[in-house]
Image: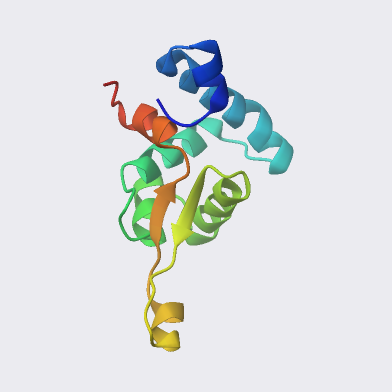
Length: 122
C-alpha cells in the first residue's frame, strides 16, 4: 500500500490513489518546477526508472531507450530527487576515491508508488 498517510486514514484503494497521485504530479507539479513539454515521455521515464530500482543508474541506457540526451535524463532525475519521488544511493567504500567514482543505484521513496508503476497489485 505504501506509506502515504491519506491511504491509511481514508482507506483509499491504492490503485486509485497512485493513479491520481501520478497524474497530479506529472501534470501539475512537474510543470511548476520545470517546464517539460512532453509529459508522456516523462511518465515513460518514471516507469522505466521504476523497472530499474535497485540497479545501477545508467543514464546512457535510459537516454537510448527514450531517445533523449544524457543532460535531459540527469535533469529529470534531479527533478525526481527534488520532489522526493526517487533518489540515487551512492555506494559506500572505505576508499573515498571509489565512493566518488562508482555509479549510484536508483531507489524510490515510497514502495506503494513503485508497486503501482510496476503493475504489482497484491
